[in-house]
Length: 499
Ligand code: SF4
Image (cartoon, rainbow, N blue to C red):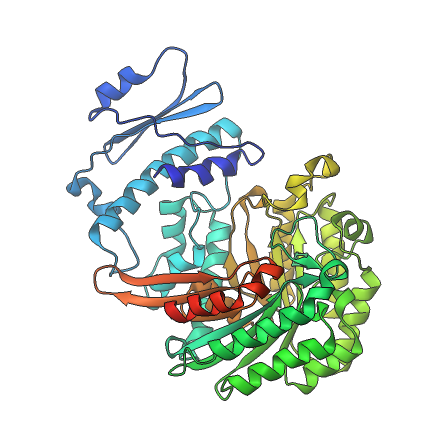
């Protein structure tokens, strides 16, 4: 429980280090809990839920949370509302207890800070996941369930409901449980963005490793193709980094290797994240078109040149427009564009202008991310360089994007949240009907195995366990390119063993 309380408190105090300490066992009754509060503490609230008492107090920047750990089954009964009938009773009971405590914390901290988190007490769980099983079982009252149980705002609960319904509708069309997806990673980029923690390598400095990297990647692809012969390959995603940061010839060799090693007859989507406009040219687009790539991304993040310069994306707004127009001219009919709300120095009008400019290009999908502060990103490690450049009104940007997308024919089709997101918001993928990126749903909802190749790639496998229901496993490759090259046989052996 102590691990889980941290992210909720951190959401209220994003710029503070939050340390959670377990001090020791306390009382079994509320009376003894009371005596634990000493006179130096400011009591923030005493919350009684379902006859349970939590007492929260603040002492020199510390929250003290007094819990009564005993739960009586009869009191818990009405609160145990797990959408998953396979979830063991003890786990459901624990979830109910956690939600009670979190609701109490939410009320007290909202009052203390004068701020309400839009996603209420939801931390570490995808909002759509909560609704997915309920929608499958045709349970009603999903919005009020999220509002009452998790304190999600009605607006965000509506967004989650709409997104989950779309996901379900899309997944029903494919036999995803019998299939799997392939991810291939390219850890090179033209330059490194100030919010990036992926560990991508600037191509100008590490380009000399690209040839050895491709050789190791081809080996991993070949060996991996032997692992899931009994399943259908349904979607392929080339991501990174930036797959188009390598040469057209190198990228072409990887695509050909995939086609040669895997059976693509059931493959309904092949995405290449072209990503950075400064990595795209006619030769690479021709290659992607000739190889039958069905979906690409050209990511502006912002259409304000000043912001691009601040965040270290060394391309121009014009390059984004030119790359998009070229791709359209060459016949790409499913192009996604990624945007970020909350970039350094941006205000609401900057974001609004970006949406207007991107809207003129009329992409097929718009993915709207909220900036997340990552430990390894320059925004954190060199924070003095970005002093005074905090974005303002990020919540308003995200709300405006939702309104804009829905008014212009884009529906939300996947949604997820990460740690340390600005104002505790969300990332949403919007698409015109029929243009959705299925891989995004499959990976977010964890409903399918993902076979992943490349530095930093993480394969996911699912297995069923009679006692605990569906379980997930991961095998992660090393992130560093040199290490990936030198340890490729070990990466392959680890994956083979796990699958
Ligand atoms: S383009 Fe993406 S992967 Fe590359 S540096 Fe920027 S955020 Fe990181």
